[in-house]
Image 1 (tube, rainbow, N blue to C red):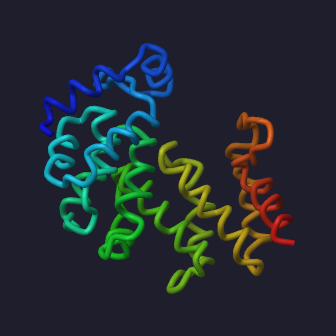
Image 2 (cartoon, rainbow, N blue to C red; image 1 turned 180 degrees about the vertical axis):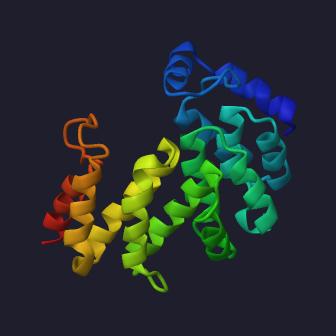
Length: 221
């Protein structure tokens, strides 16, 4: 399948309601408005096609990039390619899919995580904190959690919203998985107040770190 053929398929699957929702959430005009389920079904039809995935990514189209993530071979991407791709992001949902499907198990992820944690590019920083949050949840080997809490306390309030979200995940994970730092993590969350009034659907957990931490710890018990 070619890029043009994929675009024809995406165009036929697009709908006005999804486009409107995407636009409301910050997606620009370069989109067709395809539902997530339809993108997944198209990916199953194409299966794995790394070169097509790369070509779709370069279009910058919102739907095409989501599809590209599902059909590329992560381990065929070099660290340089990953760095360039991450820094070309323009929407959080695509960034999070990229983290989950491409970066999470990539052999270069630790070196990239360390570089991105000090990057001034907001999308690289978002990915760096996302990878760090995952590492915290898996044991935090090699991480100085005290210093991470120092950074969160001093930097999160002024960070771009895209970065705040994954910094907050790291904060919550420290409190959830590392009891010796729980009291301080909760105190930082209370002090900063980020997401305190964040609207959540019934049955969902608030992203406000103190609530999130206490809820998850209560489930552990």
